[in-house]
Length: 128
Image (cartoon, rainbow, N blue to C red; front, side):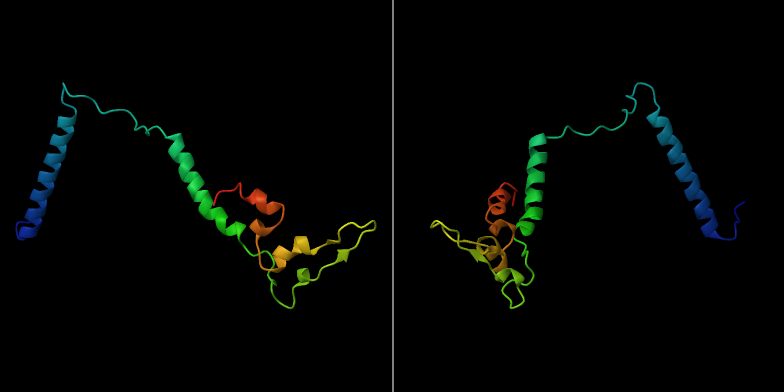
């Protein structure tokens, strides 16, 4: 029951009646005959595979590029670098000397995966 002493209570009651009346009218209008019923569940648009692969490749390139140039030897170019020490073997019969500097040189100078002799060429296949 609404008290007549306060105008705020009467205004709230009138506002509620208006809102309830408007809601009922909207529900009746939606169910009116001759109108198209609401569609079924929403469907997603077809995916463009070319754009999806392009976006994935671009994002993958930004993620892989820093890994390819990441410095693998944390002590590179320092006096504590154990890869800076090399060993060379001089084979018999006039063959060229064989040393470890070819493999450890790119790492001891602060290089990453892309600077390694064999793996560096294969890392070019990766995006980025």
